[in-house]
Image 1 (spheres, rainbow, N blue to C red):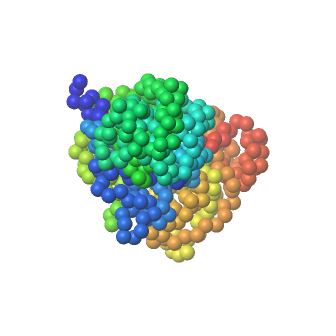
Image 2: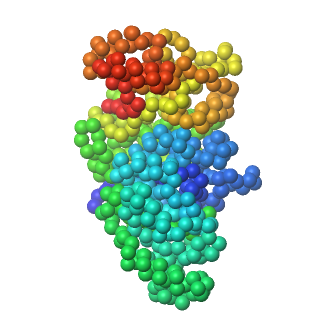
Image 3: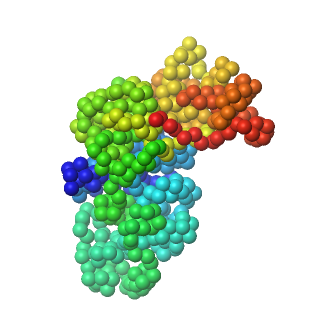
Length: 525
């Protein structure tokens, strides 16, 4: 095996998905803690004298106690290089989450043991299913009052149509949760500080009688016998095809079961996968470097007004200083300061391999969906834009600063914080978002990062759809006829701004030659 192939095989690039409050950010912190990446894990809503969550670094995130931006952390564990992408859990940021999931090869699904499958979990799972992303399930909060483990497994199989393979089994639950029993290699893990756990002879080992009350031991042993007899066995092929999930139980807050997840990632999660491009399949182990931009983040360092493009390396090896082709513009650029990330912190990347996530400082030349190669003309598929559900106009308190607001909105739109539509009739621009929380984040960031206090006014439209036609003349005529209801987006593509759902439906019926789309594929080739 070549050194390139060996390095690529070490990579595991994964995301964590969950319903809000299922414990995603806490699990993220503990994975970093037990991976040796940090010395002290912070609680999300920490007191001022305690450490905050490392993955939640924005002022908005720290204030609200939620993740609103995808955060990247790279660390090593047991000989593997783990690239963890912490995704926004709130449904108002589903477009950010979708783009992030295009950059991973596997995912951890966190489920609250008391609540089971929740609405947001189901939606995120469906996104993963569209890409056949292998999923490791962690049933969290077993130290609190919870549902029966067998009931939770049954719900996963019925609601998500996903086969389950329990890898460990909880010993007790709620206040009497004592740890987990390894169904694959008989051992008990009581605290994650003990990497190997306590080897046991099996479910009948006397140590269980110490951990559980007398009347509970026999019930637990009968449950274990049922699980071993009736539940599914782990199958690596089925897992990597996305049809089976290994299931772990624990409590991220109390450090139960976290190390099991790390071990499973190293042992079972796939290394960087081949990726589909417009013209061919790009193999991860190809020697030529290719990469796709899936996220833009401005002002990570408020002192330097910086702008970072996050790139997933799809194939080959990136070396600091190498010259690459920016496919969309056909220009050559030098990667002088590629960076690895640990949330807000960063370090210079001398080299990186397929599967790694690197940051590329730039002054606005890179956009979401852009592709960098060593010369090949290629475009990767799968990074869409979604039609916004809320449209607003912005009112600036100080009209003299209108030019600065325009520049700031353009930067926010390039980041993907909002979508920006410029009406053809010259009226004020309109911003579009998926949910109300995105409006709050936009206002917070414009105030904190640009010194632009704003408020919102209603927009004269209720829906936005991208319009195209196989007949260029028909599209041109439609735009001319509906000029007051048509805008252009950041890419210059035409968007129809409908006054109401009825107006949209009526216009569609009257113009069958025009396609109205609520999803736009990003093509940067």
